[in-house]
Length: 202
Image 1 (cartoon, rainbow, N blue to C red):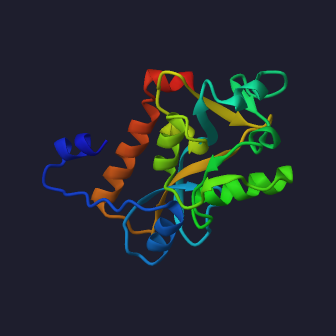
Image 2 (spheres, rainbow, N blue to C red; image 1 turned 120 degrees about the vertical axis):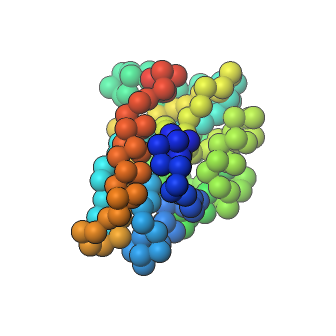
Image 3 (cartoon, helix red, strand yellow; image 1 turned 30 degrees about the vertical axis):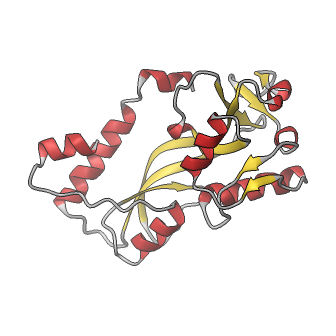
């Protein structure tokens, strides 16, 4: 998307700020950023936002991980591999900090199933935790939009009901948006709608 934007608008430089969604929400609310792509379980009413897509939280693991003995497909759940959180919670997880979206959701899932977290680490970025889980070092939470085809790796939906959240574009409060912001926003919507064929497997 950034390559395409640069090709269309070579005179406009996009300055990227990479942070957890909660930090980006604060930056948008303070007017520091023109636009933010945010994973948002509950969109804050203080900001204008557009829904880009609905994302899902997965558990990532190797296909040889013992959690696979608890995995189901269908049977009243999603039509893809899924596991009950109470079964997954029996194993070690690589967790993000609780002041992140994934860390908050993880804490909620443990609370719902009434089990304490068995954590290898509680302060990992989502990308690093998922990478370690793909190499067999525990389980990790990740987003469907971040799932990548990897041999011997499985992405599991959580519980029959699944765990969904919105991926949104947020803007500072007010009606004004620069032309560059509008064009970038339109391009993000366009690119996300062009789902890669491998993503359909997830």
